[in-house]
Image (cartoon, rainbow over all chains, first blue to last red):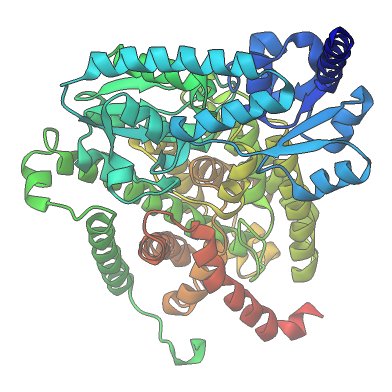
Length: 274
Length: 333
């Protein structure tokens, strides 16, 4: 009996060791959103490479953490020198590149990139399992949920004001986008979504003037060096007629490109101005 | 066509072109993504949303359409007269593309913010370089064909340079805006753009219009012009400056809108009795009419997500260009 117990204990210990071994040790990511989750959940020593977008402060919430890590350009040849034992790609990465990496014998996991906080819950947990960081993933979600509850309490009972998102080139964002989810969690109505825009769409300056939104969310990178025709849209003098009567908030893309704790930051940024 | 056309008086031509311009201007102000409340726009120009739409969104845009149209029509007529080449136009000989390159280098590398005139200045330097090059290439004996082929080569080089410059710009939108520079658009241009470019366009127009009598003399031959007392070389340089000023400034705020400078002088030439001086001002008006019509067409064809203006002008101008080549085929070989 005692012998059996000993054997069982040894087996368990072995299994635990095997489990530890199975935890990927050199993880590479090819997509901005998976880059940021990886940096949030996994110790730096187990990260082999992230995409160059992750290191750019204008697009990445985790730019500070990505500094010094080997960067790839979202391409197969960028990750191969680091001998990754797990490569994570987003659903929108080039499928031919993914099949090439698999032919070369690499383990590639394609994960879905969530567009709102509800989808993100399952995706973050699944991601945690893949990279061997289930606990960190659960902690992250718990923290996000706590903050979201505080936000919900703060905006409860306040009227849903009309907000318009405006980006360079007269682009606006409608249903099914991260920004749409950010607006609804902040207790705002998205003008473009109400006008039937799905995803990204054009919204002329004239339509914006007539709609008279109470909030104008400028979806821009704050410091862009060098001008462009796209940015000159946001300097049109007529836009002053909108901004005179609306609360103007610049929403940095690093908070609105991907879903995760940065999404909660974005919601807090809006709620703090109500 | 020209065989059936009788020259008409300046007054009749002015009346017809002016009336067409006024009608198109009114249509262009009325048309847009929002149905305009004219009552509110006119009675409360600053206080009402419709006032802002009329006076700050549509008015500057359509005035810019007129100014750019005047520039392209006028410079087309001037270049055809000066080079004595029926196939010349500011775009075909490479002047508009070079102006676009100058503007691109100014805008995307952060120089445009240095001064209000920096962007038009970039365009004018590019245009000046190109038009001087064209006149040197053309010399006295260049055939019609040499010039157009040289223009093709210049256009190929310069469009590549525009793409290369945009590729190296730090702005994330730069590369996608190559279409704007190669095909031209005045969507969402504001009063600021109009005011920055207009002084230089005006100076260019006046300079070109002052070349009218020289062009009349030149149409009788280089020697005749000299014997009539014109300093041909000096007059040519004056025209170079005029084209550079107005085309450079226009392109810097509208991109490269093709074929207007080629088509308009040809359509109007029979009506002015083939007199280059009369062709100058009538082509200026004709260019404005054609560009306004094209701008109404792009807004009507693709409301909201507008086509580029060059798409429309090339659809009209391309076949016309082929027709001209066919008609001049004996002179070209």
